[in-house]
Image 1 (cartoon, rainbow, N blue to C red):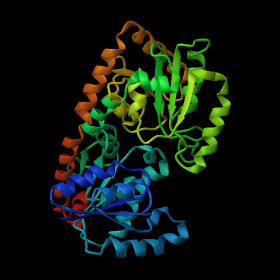
Image 2 (tube, rainbow, N blue to C red):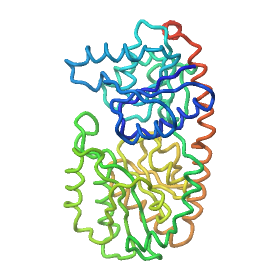
Image 3 (tube, rainbow, N blue to C red):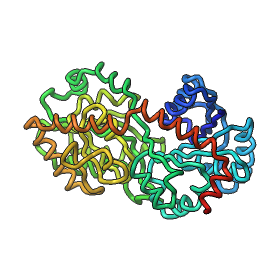
Image 4 (cartoon, rainbow, N blue to C red):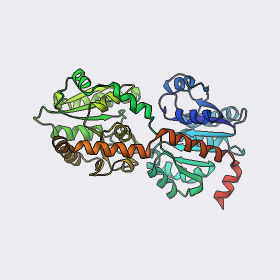
Length: 394
């Protein structure tokens, strides 16, 4: 079959490529439609031997420009036409749903995370429009539950997380923890926590006034946890997601300059593995998240302290393979950091890491998930768009 994958960005969303590759390996023809042909996603698509076409994504345009962009997008989308259209990220899904109105072409939306559903207006819109897709793939058990609450039926809903490649995990053996620590300036016998996350400026429409990834709450907690102690170090891996996020990044560095040498601002990187292998615990104090960084950390045998939001409790079991804390709660982060430090000193933290890795292997095995995705796509392609909508109405 001919498959068109629509993604609203050419930078990021790299997790969409392995699933497209799985379809290609199964004998299907796959192309991408992106808003730009420059960016790491476009490069990965080309490197995988798939074609990428540029198109205006209608629901990324100013309101007055949407009708014209939608007409152009529809004409381009229907060239061929494809047997199945797959969308990643919500603006892509809305654009595909609108463009395919009146056609019989099946469509599948793979939802990357719950943030858009945390806006009341957007959630209402999704309640009304998810039925325009033939099938919804939730990338965590949590998201599956969210779509069930929106009325999605079990036969039109699947759980397929964005998995982790076992080769990526195996490749982490190239990094020597002691060497990584030495390059940063950290003693081999120190306690090291790490946060790997982009910096997002506070948003107006969801979680108003706070950065989504919770850096500010972690730094506030770290200020107390590491006060007057030189054996505790925090690695902050990441930079502003967009240039508009860089002032927020700079402001946090100024506001928490007093934490001194215990915090290491390492900037962005294309490979986070070296920092995970050098760490004893990962911290994800997000206000909104799907499976997030705890999945990568767990795959590398590093337990997580995570907010009890979104899909993270699907990976982190409090007191067994990590710690769950309420969002926006620096005081509870301090408690979790202290407990993880105590377990590090006693040697019990190693068992937490082993359990975290086993949970990641169970939930995030990429080859298995790629096979599941192909099966779901092939089934969706056999259901004409009109029939799926009729069944939902009944």
